[in-house]
Amino acid sequence: MSAEPILVADGVTIAYGAREIVSAATLSVAAGERVALVGPNGAGKSTLLRAMTGLMEPRAGGIRLCGSAISSLSHRAVARSIAVVPELAQLPFEMLVDEVVALGRLPHEPPLTGLRASDHAAIDAAIERVGVSHLRHRDARALSLGERQLVFIAVAVAQAAPILILDEPTAHLDIRHQVETMELLVDLNERDGTTIVAVLHDLALAAHFFPRIVVMAEGRIVADGPPSETLSAERIRAVFGVDPALVRLPVGAG
Image 1 (cartoon, rainbow, N blue to C red):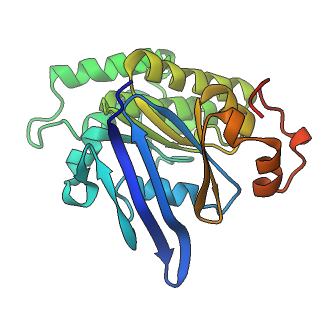
Image 2 (image 1 turned 120 degrees about the vertical axis):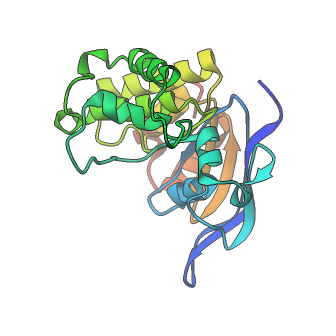
């Protein structure tokens, strides 16, 4: 794993009017890392992620992507480096699965010539890699939530960006699809070297599948490290306000 940071939030403060959502957050992610952001609702996790993808302008501090200020980069340049899987992505009209996955090639597609042979190859490879080949000619709106989540991960894989950012990728999924999604992220990280940053609510999933956990509370980063340190019984009680015995973490994580 490279020690060079590929994505950095440096002293980032984000506010809506007078209300601060994220306060002086500093987070450095190295190429090839797998990082989970956890914390109670309203902690600022998703807001920080949106800033780190260039979708929000911090009131203070800055975001650096591959050494450059993200605000200085074009949307296409950012999209070539960061693929985003939002929470509960919706489709406004009928689209076949392979048409949805093709959206991942937009940052690479010449504006006048459309999809090239290399784009079709990337789409086919992404569909195969994520395991949704049997769905490719289905209307994506008719899929289950778990199937649709895998399709949107396939979009990100087709995008071929070195960084994959996900906001609640397991929300509303059953246990089987939760595990399948986490295993796919681990495989993309370990086999392809994709940098993974994900917001998760399930502490057990985060501790089992992510070697680095960043804990946020009230807009601040309060812990950053391996699950065994960041998800101690004392911190779970202090940050989440629950009895740690109710949170089933992997042995040695809490």
